[in-house]
Image (tube, rainbow, N blue to C red; front, side, top):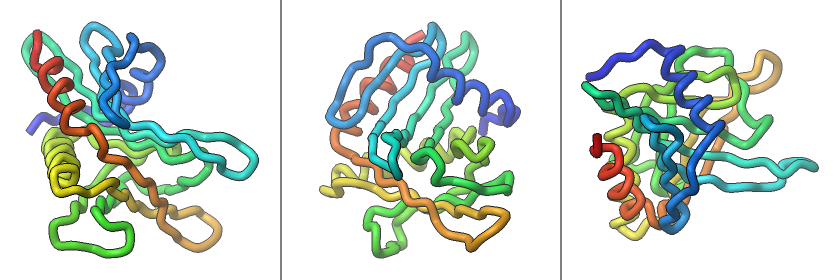
Length: 182
């Protein structure tokens, strides 16, 4: 398994959103070339939270280098909905919002300063992309991410982010092909 320092992963994931070439759209997903070596596959959705229009996003990232390829994932919940003081955040990914199934996915991600969570583990990303593709193939319309919101003051609750799977498999095929190209 590829191990990359956490700060490098967080910086790569977070700052890769600053620039991008025009996106190729596949259903609810888009593939974007962020730089010569960074490619992203992302789902974005906007919603009204309070009096503000805000966006949540799940992005899979591929950084290609001459001798290696790194995969990571970042989940940005709606602004102001996530607060957690822990370095590691348990993430439950379910096919059904209201029911746990033994085939659902439980992973540990890292806290990115209460604005996002991320995984710099190729293994986690492989499990996640396999889970999303299998969900889409089985007719699931969306998957659900749950992770703890643990503010210093107040009760612990869960953050819930819903991600559409429409178009994921086609987008992921294009992403894999582009990520494999030197």
